[in-house]
Length: 233
Image: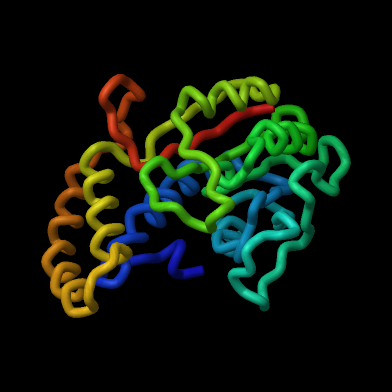
């Protein structure tokens, strides 16, 4: 879907621009590792399906979502649904799996991670993203904002190894994202929102240009927009 894989900064998308582009950038970074059979966990509208199939060695793409998941598009349905406890697949069914902005909605993340581990083939990879700086969403099913330390512990507890976690953005991107969320989502009049969006767009563009997420280290005092990573079975 173009609003996920090809998005330009404009006055009306100041809230979602950075998170969409940073997730897509992270996905493209790991795409060479995707191959064979791929499981999309919490797939929603499967916005990356076409791009992944066209730009990787993935041969089969399976979308999985929770039975009670929010319906984003009545015309796009997951290939399978599950109850959040046991995925409807045999052990070692998939070469790789991914879940973007999913784990923050899981009341018991290790239940989900254990299932991901189970259905992956030996050596299979799991790619994921989670938000750190984001408003409450899909309430009341918004459970967590993870630190990298908690994520690593959950992944290790599920059996994963070779865990590599990175930030989607640092201090400058965090400021840009917060300003974008504020101007597009906080209560204010339509005229005020329109005026401030025009005013803030170049500020966001400048902050995003300044940000160097590849240099972010998970240390005391660091601010991040979100986290992405790869873990191996």
